Image 1 (cartoon, rainbow, N blue to C red):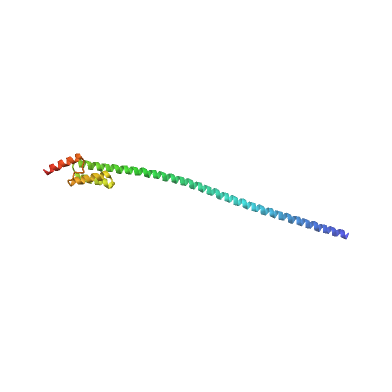
Image 2 (cartoon, rainbow, N blue to C red):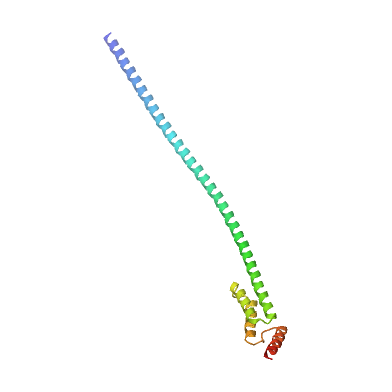
Length: 168
């Protein structure tokens, strides 16, 4: 009976040890599962952060592209406006030059050569390389000095006649 009691005690100890081993094994399993779940949660959190960062970058890129497109449109519009302004300014300069040359031509026909030189000079102040103004100024300056060779035939004849009459 004592052996039987010892056997029962031994079985109880073994059962208790088996229970303890089972509980320890279950705890280890739970710890492994908990660790795996924590790692999975961390991975998912990293992926969520990366996705949010990627979306933010894509939004910023899209905003920057839209702003760039807007700026490119503004630059194109400004260039077009500048070109139009330059054309208008050039047309105004050409009109002013034509007006000064026209006044100089009237003075030439009236045989007022020095006044004509002044009008041609005004045209040359606007465009120093204007060929017609340069040519007509040279003719007016020469005529003012008595050299009518650069004048047109009709202007030369009128200037020579006026010079002869003045000499009388």
